[in-house]
Image (cartoon, rainbow, N blue to C red; front, top):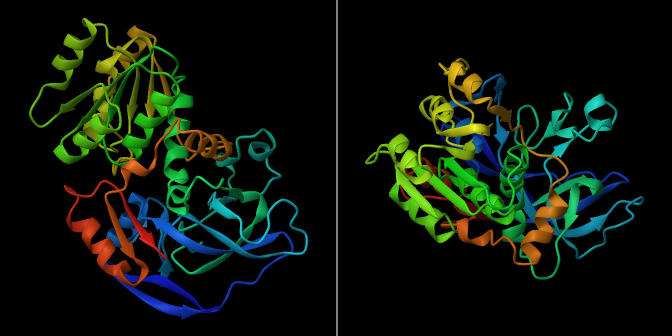
Length: 345
């Protein structure tokens, strides 16, 4: 077995190198990776070299949305076997802190998360990973779909944080990958009116294909006026911000109904954003936030397997591993065209 990895070697620079095979610990499985999704965070690291306090120092392997097939197991592995297809949940937590012990392990301060400095990612042929963070895929789910479980988990966590339920009305700000998986999640949880807002026509087209009941192009239409008209000036039950824009974050208090819930998912470049808290307080609206996800992979996999959620529809571009530099370059320079790109390892 030969292992290769795609390294970020500088701003907008990538190269593939031969690397050693990973060492298998007793409770690890060796996964031959088959698909890795290109996430917005990967692109941000490549373009800027950092996200907030997470700074890339030296050559770095990107990628954390991944799935593949097990080729070897450690001596203490109990529930997986060679030949199983698995999706990897990319955060290895301590299991000992108050957050891990109360089931909120996504808040673990000592998490080792793939492709978050200083921890390398998964753009490689083989990875050794703990059995308990590898989730078996049923026969009717491909490893390409398995790699999309990670972003879907974010969307499902957003819907859970927003307490989305049967009959709800939703506005999703942003129709990138996270906006679209949030749309799929809200549909699965029973929302009946889902409006998606963006400025890129192709993304709005995809939102319509995936089941949005309405779309608004914010570059052409007054979003506030349109939502007022659609809701009889009441606003919607839940507003979910996925664009990570200061402008859209500051719009949320005007779109939410009395007693509704705002869910903040997108991370804006600015830490401090002007926000109308008087309107929030007058409406007694709740504000929830999302940091990754927790306890969602099994449910997400079942939802895909049963046909409740069709995740494959978000992929617009696929590249071979040898084209990884070209793939990132394409994603960076064709944001109007790309909805979701994946690397076939």
